Structure formats: structure tokens, C-alpha cells
Amino acid sequence: MLKDRPQDRPKDSSHDRPQARQPDGHRAWAAVAVVCAALFLLGLDFTVLNVAIPGLRADLGPTLAETQWIVDGYALALGGCVLAGGALGDRYGRRRAFLAGLALCGAASAAGALAAGPGALVAARCGMGLGAALFMPATLSTIVHVLREPAARRRAIGLWAAVAGVGAVFGPVAGGLLVDRYGWRSAFWLNVPVIAVIALAALLAVPESRAPESRAPEARPLDGPGALLSCAGLLALVWGVIEAPGRGWASAPVLAAFALAAALLTGFVRRQLRCAAPMVPVRLLRGGPVWPAVTVLALMSFAMFGAMFLLTLYLQQVRGLSAWQAGQRMVPLSLSLAVGAVLGPVLARRFGARAPCAGGLVLIAAGFLQLAGLATGSGDGAVLFFEATAGFGAGLLAPVATEVVMSAVPIGAAGVGSALNDATRQVGSTLGVAVLGSVLATSLDRAAPADRAAFADAFLDGLADASAVGATAAALAAVLAWLALPGRGLAVVFHLPNQPR
Image (cartoon, rainbow, N blue to C red; front, side):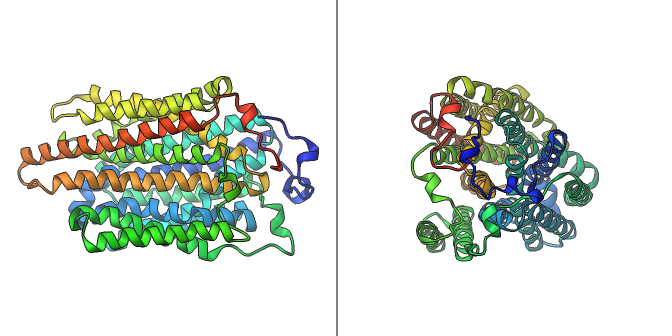
């Protein structure tokens, strides 16, 4: 990455103001540790209920579609509102947004622990997602603000990407331990004291920052209609995907949902192109490496989060493992992901972004081929192969693609850039669980749950079909990464002209 030049920095840059003074090295890394702790909790919340589904269904009796909504409600609210959350942080203060999001997430977690029915639990998960949409963009934009030296920032972004993945993988581990000992509600209660500790640490270690133009008298209001269009469009899309197996893919309600989603999301894109203060920095998507990078991140998230949803169900419902036993078997995935996240930036500095991103996606596709061959009697070795292969591949590409996005964004708009990166990942994650879960549900509809053998056969058939979808998504993303991402050193491609650094 090229070093910042004084003449390239905007005169009203936030780091030139006394109230936005850049922290020293120790405090900067303390701030990184705090925001990464919040990110770890976010990832954990995303997947912690995967192993709790059997106990939750026995207690509250949700349908399969309601169960998917309980899982997807968090990611849907997060993915749909994260762009607005990033814009709010840039304008009103990223630490303020971070603390407000933590408070909302903690309150919604307590409501989820007290939920008496599926509807209340879905509402609580959506509330948690709304809180996460406020604080998640602030994690990456704070890193960009406190670390201006390129090498330090690269290390911190690599750490950020690793924590994001490891937190999601550790969700089933923590969930398994809590569910087996204290029941599924404990997965919600866990958040309350942890969030309180993180909020206190943020008050002590995280500096306030915002976009410099937010203080100008002519600052434009936030794009409220754009936020509504994006949220409503994603809601309609995921509702259609979740309901399609039960109602039929060609049923009138499902087709109407897809048509509504297409209209709303098209309206959102058109508004961003015309709006004076768009939520999405459209100019960053016109050529250059940003649009393929965010697309690759979305497809990687689609494949990996869908796979984790399928894998935890397989371990419990086909192999008959407890929640804790299933969670233990997810640990190698986090380890391989962390190793990949360390090596990915090293490869990128030598070969460019193309090699680790395309290679990582090929490994994910290969892992899905192994997942498709799982059987009732498959041992831990088959699961371990998938986790080692796909996890390492995801770790390779995640920090590299993230740095491609963030290096193209001016520091003053770091919250929006972070939100763009986050939104694509969360939308991909949401649709991965919804689409692959729906493919699995289509197969399960042909089997009677009481017939254990028939149910296992139907599950494995559905797992094979869903794995084929995941492998295809990863393979297509690998082609895109190879063709569209830069193959030269990152120091060249990370500098975009006319972008104040």
C-alpha cells in the first residue's frame, strides 16, 4: 500500500483536529482489541443457536420455517440495516454508534432469553441484529482511524477478518456447552454481562471519530428512503427463499415476494445513483477491484455460513451427537480459518489479491464436494477434511478481500466502506443459510420424521443437493476472483487516484 502523502489528505481531515487526535500505539491496539472483542461476540451470536435448534424446537415448537427465521432474523436485520449503521457512525460518531448498538443488542438478548414463543424469539433476534448493525461498521472504521501506518493496519485488518470467522465458528462450541448444561436460553443470557464489559472497555480505550464533512453546515441528511428500500427488499427476498419449500417455488406468495424484492432492490440501486448523499459509495463500484472483492466476500459467506448450518444439523440429527459434542467438532474449522487468515495477506503482498482469493474459493468448493459425500456412518475424518479445507480457504481470502475494499475508501468515509464490506458478507450469510437450508428442507419434506432411516436418507440426499449449490457458488466466485481481482502487488492496486487518503 502506498504511504499517505500530506498533500493527498483533505484539509478537514478528522485526524488534524484536536478532538480526533490519533491515539498512540498502545492505545490504538487497545482500541483494536475492544472492537475485535465485540466482533467476536457478533460472530458468536450469528451461529450460537445452530446447535440449540433441537432443544429450542422441543421447548417452543417452532416449524422449520420459523426455525430458519430464528436463525436468519439476526443476519437479516444486520445485513439490511448495516449500511445505515455505518452512515450513522460516520455522521454522529463511531464510538456513539458502537455503544448504542451494544446497548440495543444486550437488551434484545435479554428479551430473547425470556421469550415465550417463536414469534417473540424472532423479534428478539431481529433486535439483536439491529444492534449489531450499529456497532459492526464501527469496528472496522475504528481500526482504519486509529492505525494509519499501512503495515500495522494490514495486520489489524487480518486480525479483524480472523476474529470475524473464528467468532462465528465458536458459536456452536459455546452454544453446545451452554445448551447441554443450562438450556438454550443461556445462549442469550451470556451476552448481557459480556456486552457490559465491552462497553466499559470502549469508554476507556476507543476514541471518538466521525467523517469530517459531518461537521460542515451543508451536511446532507441520511438517506432514510434508501435504508427502507434496502431493508424491505432483503426482507422480501429472504422470506420468499425460506417459505418456498413449504409453499412451493412457483406458488403465488413466493413469486410475489421475489417480484417485490426485485422491484425494491432495483429502486434502491436507482436511488443510490441519483441521491446526493447515497448510503452506498457508488463511485467505488464503478470499475476497479472493489465490486469483485465485495462479490467474492458475499459468495464466500453464502457458502461457509450455509455449510455450518448444514453441518451442525447433520452432526445432531443424523449422527445423533449432543449439542456439546457437535460444537466440539467445529473447533478445527476455527483453527484452519485462523491459519489461513495469517497466510492470506502474506501471499497477497507477494502475488496480489487474485491468488489467495481464487485459491481459497477453490478450496471451499473442494470442501463442499467432501460434504456432499457424507453418510450416516461417516466418521470425524470426513468432517475434519471439510473443515480443514474450506476453513483454510475462507481464511486465505477474507482479510485480503476486506483490505481491497477498505483501501479504496477515504478515511472520512470509513464507516460507509466498512458497512459496504459488512453488508455484502451479512447478506451472503443470510442467503446461504436460507437457500441451502431450503434445498435441504425440500428433500426432508419427502420423509416422515418418525421413520429414522428414511429421515436420515432424505437428509443426506438434501445435504448432497445443498452441497452442490455451495460448491457451484464457490467455483463461480473463484472464476470471478481470478478474472477481476488484481494479480500484481497490493501496493500498486490499493492506491486509487483521486481518493483522499
